[in-house]
Image (spheres, rainbow, N blue to C red):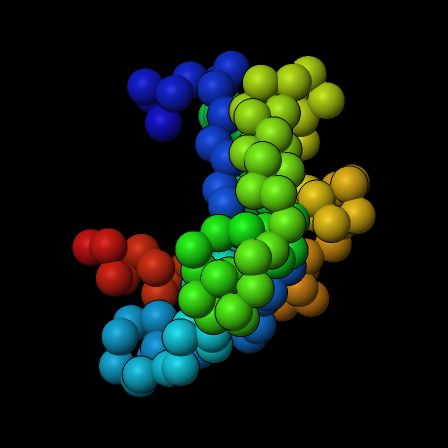
Length: 144
C-alpha cells in the first residue's frame, strides 16, 4: 500500500457471475466445477475489494471491483459457452476508465457493473459484514 499511495487505484476484475463463497473451497480443500469456482472467486474478490476500500477510506488507494461486462469475447467465454461474445474492447475501456477518470476517484469500496453502466450493489453476501470478515480471514490465512 505505501508504494501505491493515497492517490493510486486498484481495479479488481470482478464479474456479474458471483455466488456464495465456500471457505473450504477457497482454501482448496473442496473441488468445484469450473463455473462455480469462477463465480465464487469473483465474489470473494469483490468482498475483499469492497471491505478493504471502505476500511481504508482516505488512508489508502481507491479500491474498486468492476464487472467489465457479461459475455464479452474472451477465450473463457468462447470455450465455456461456445459463442464469440461481445466486443472485448467494452471491458478494456471500462477498466481504463476506472483506473484513470475522475468519476472513479472517490469510489473506493464500491462495485461498478458495466452491464448497467453504473455503480451497483454486488451479490448480497458482499453487503454482509460478518460474511465479508469470514472470507477476508480465510484469504489472509491462505496468504500467510
